[in-house]
Image (cartoon, helix red, strand yellow):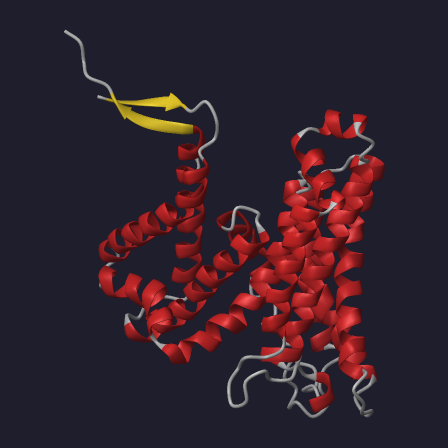
Length: 354
């Protein structure tokens, strides 16, 4: 019979393999679920997971959707390593876009190379300011950052709705709730001419390398890990939990705000009520799929971006509903959490004795 046995030490091999096992199980479960719903399960899963990688013309779409996921997940992973649970990155993403758009509207009649960097800086500061609220409440009042950061997301979204339907509405937009389209000096330049690959994609990859160097090669990264793994040892070592909370929340907010600005100045080119697309929540899955490792997060971001692109393909080819993408991502998170048990436990075959 089968028996669970605890490993003496966590398995490094399973730590690396369990995300791949989780992806495989998600595909298998997806086939079963979609077939039970009356769809072609095999075709549906193939459209979501495989078609985006097999069709080169879709690779740019994966990069565009993967860049914000990677940026947000990098910030979340830094905090998660320190047991700082910022669940409201979606709100910081929205606030970064709002702050950057504010600069764009102020400079609408101006030209110059400095406008886009000013928007980027505003986006970073907007995300940091929104993340500073739960950081302050946790450090000063011991209020859970999980609840405060999450609730602030809805405040940010409502602020966005108010602005695009009120003071920021495009006067020439036929009364649609949206801002003016950004000018050429306010949009991200394209890296590959004639494609959708904008500057935000290589920036996201560069920041992943910088985050890896920070976490693996610096004293600050070591302090973050110690505070998360052994708070008592961190205090004896002189590492401040309060400073770590502030630092990780601000880093997380900055990267989420940067992602929001990149989306506003890239694919959207303006702010609309459809701007909050759930990247801040999906990035939590990306962070864990990448094992909170910045380089692994790049892999996780590509996988989850492919589900967005594949979900759009499946809507037209298999007639899957739009919600299927979210369901697939939820199944992936569930399977990832389930397979994590293999890191500390192993299954052995034990013969029954008479």
